[in-house]
Image 1 (tube, rainbow, N blue to C red):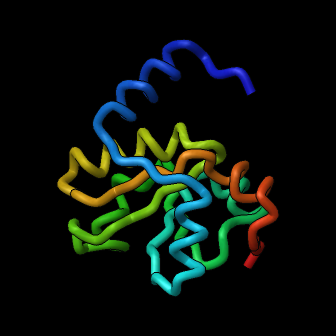
Image 2 (tube, one colour):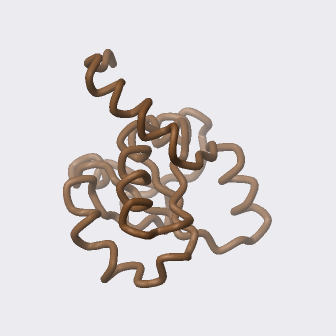
Length: 123
């Protein structure tokens, strides 16, 4: 998918302020038994087609509005993912601005996860 230049500039700006992880690291941590809070920020229709098992869905359009109710602890690590790591970077930046000190964007996102043949669900 080709992204518009202004969108890419917004993503680059957000990535300059956030922490990122990647698919392999998240999988490694899950395999080690860590209980990670993984949040899918894609659209509802994308989430319904498949997502990482156990992921909480808070779409990019509502995450800023609903995060405090879903995750009241602003110091809790939150791993965010979208289709490829761009929308999740913007979401992580916004959560950081809201005082969430441990919001992390997963580079590669859903595409990286599913292309690696990792577990997915529709439930």
